Length: 153
Length: 153
DNA sequence: GCCTATAGTAAGCCTGCTTGTCTATCTAGT
DNA sequence: ACTAGATAGACAAGCAGGCTTACTATAGGC
Image 1 (cartoon, rainbow over the protein chains, first blue to last red):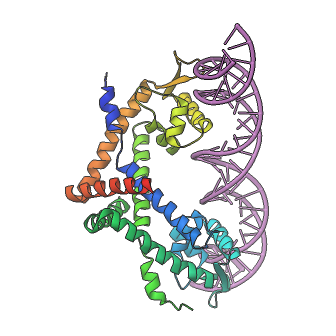
Image 2: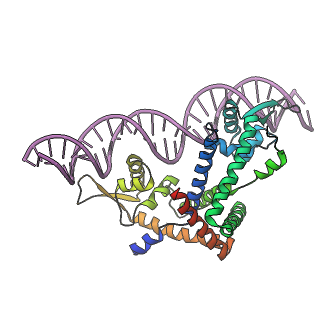
Image 3: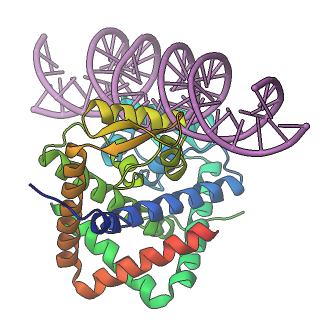
């Protein structure tokens, strides 16, 4: 039977990549959400911020959105309806398919895109300062590699 | 009025640290949960895996757990009750305080701790292979720095 | 004409918490 | 000692977020 050394076991539990990654991701998301709220986009929830990146600048369909975001069409449709009610998106009839609707950005939606771009640069600049250019580049490289490695598993 | 170049805007949306961090964290968590399930701990949910690291090897109190995990005592109490029902934890009367209960690991709980330690080393070894030693060290350094920087903000 | 695809409506579930309230116990002040 | 207030924890109810399943209507493709 195993008789572990409690101190050694405790020490090994302190912190690990998983927790570090989770904290970093959570901090980034909180920062991004707060930033968007500060820029006036106070009605956007994390679910919206998660969906919007999957909509092309020139627009797209609910079905496409659902596929990319990995959720059901109904879920995507609901989020789109909310974003429509809040003025970010609008529906246009698809000229080539009577069943489909083209989901496109409104003017407010476009402003959101630009704000998101600005905010992203701002946050990345902060991180760059904290880490220094080399570590920052290494972080990006490492995460990109991990994305490739884990997606193929 | 701003007239953005749609192509440039689209290109800038491709991917960024936030998404990379989120993906990496999600992959790690999925890997860890799957690993624990594979080791027989099929009744542990992400919420349990999030709480357990805050319990010292020698045990502790509900209140301490709640503080560390950043949740209410009730929430911590509920999770502990579930873990008790599943056989990982048990309650002992605190000899020094009649109100309090000492939450301690059962034998199964200790096995979980050892399995978690093993699994952690396994996953970290995988990551190290994917990234190479230098990039791996850089990743750890960068995330640790970020943890320090963002926690102080 | 038949099968499939797009999307909307309605209802509801799951996870992971929270608030509100209560008892038992401890601590400090008088 | 006695009492006022704080603290540990339990019990109950419920909510927020983010989905899902089930069903219907309509439009296209072969």
